[in-house]
Image 1 (cartoon, rainbow, N blue to C red):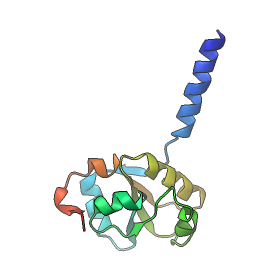
Image 2 (cartoon, rainbow, N blue to C red; image 1 turned 90 degrees about the vertical axis):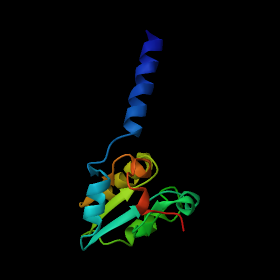
Image 3 (cartoon, rainbow, N blue to C red; image 1 turned 120 degrees about the horizontal axis):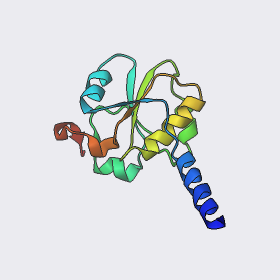
Image 4 (cartoon, rainbow, N blue to C red; image 1 turned 30 degrees about the vertical axis):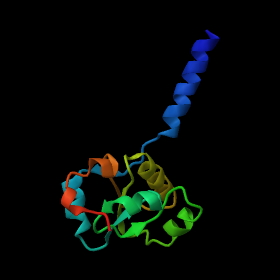
Length: 127
């Protein structure tokens, strides 16, 4: 019985750590369309090494969610604008979006599945 309780506590803890943001998840085509609108900005929250290997062309900001200056970088953004956030697979972007929501951002979107799900190889930049 105690073992079962421990398993339940661990499972609940893991689920809480991966809480989803309320940001709408977008596919590749939706991101491409929205990113062309005025006052819509794309934010990559991966590491500089990941960005150096490839990123989505047209990305406006590169803020590593695990860096010491992430909070300061987010604070520099206009909360009235719209942001589409992505990472490699969706975990870090969810963490970034949760933080942004806590800070008062309301117009937030996420690339569903991160850059791994990006279905347009012609718009991936490696420069």
